[in-house]
Length: 305
Length: 315
Image (tube, rainbow over the protein chains, first blue to last red):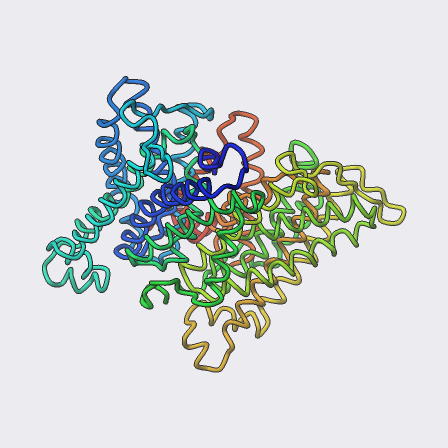
């Protein structure tokens, strides 16, 4: 929620350049939604679990980065590489110790378990680091703006757009072209069948959960320089990510990308045209999607049952 | 999952012999009188929620909306119109039901996991509306100065009298809820939970039943919300928070879903525990998180049933 303040304009002047900047800011904000919803949707497709702790993992990514950079005075690039790995490891531990126990029960028990884990993680961080927000500096190399010809755009946000584009293409290729990706896709369709074919599906489950958690952690550490980090920063973005997957459709990479861009743009455009409703606009859009196409733009019928 | 049975200690008629005095003297057993009211208010909330979650099988993370909307609208009617108490409560229920009709209509278009996410998203939306519309709701500070109008000659300024009002409404709600779940309608809801497709093929209009169940639970939530506003003389913004939805879910799980008595017990236990522990530590939410995880892992049939099973059946 608070993250948005950094996306809001200094004044509400309405020239065309400003609208362009906001359009690009919408893409940058959308990048975070894309990274988060990709993880959410891959985990859901495989495990049938909506990971409520996804926002908390995002927050953990930011705090990992903070600890590495500000406390141990490490390098920002090191934090960008290490934080997702640490968060992925935490995700792997969560999956293999807790979530695994409940796969045979109705799905909502696992969902409630992740909700409980979310509270637990947020409160633990709040106890360790205090509920106060922490500053996180933009790395020196990415300070300032780049002249794109028709407007100036902050380097750091361009960097985020680049990373997201790279990862989205990477994940698409990974899922579509590699053997492991094929196993994951097969497991999404029928995990018992994959298990019967002699592939250890429980390892794949853990791997997929770790991957999703890592993406959330990466989004967190990338978001950190744009805002003060605080223990409850994940809650707001979690609901917005839910809106993304409801609009885009669960289980689809393209759905996540399209949904992420739509939600990002709606929020940043809402700030220009109707500031008090900027937060509400995405829910109204979601309601419209529910009315017209309940499973979302690219939603698979299977997940909708 | 088969039908969940409550332990015989609630089923036997003679248990009323100690349950009735317990409820009558509850405010004298708690550390302060108002805690007893709060316990029963959340019991009403959880009872209604169980009709939706426990009996119909729909997990909603949006019930803070109806609790909050009931609290805010009752509070506003009582403040702005100086209305009588009953009008305030009924007004809150009316507003909540209108909201529930819209939210319910949109949410039941989707199933399962989607339903959870959609209701949660709507909850966040109403939270933002209350936060931003501070002229009406007081925004972050909450809605202050909710009066407690007298009912005829009875003044409600004492916590004890408010408790007995809440108790009266609680008993009425309990009879209503029992009537609902034991009626043919309630049976239809349960059939929906165990196999929706079959219920549909028998000829039930399942969406219709889901919406009515949604509205019933919203009704209980709104009444509880209105009473909560009276109880605090104030409506905190947190009533609309997702955590309030989370609270009622965990109350139901701890008590045992689909039993009606279970969630009542769970709600009373959790509110009492929260009060007790808040005196010791600031980190109630941390404990709540641990409680949530452990009860989902180990107390899925409700604390009473699980404890009884472990003590007497050694499994």
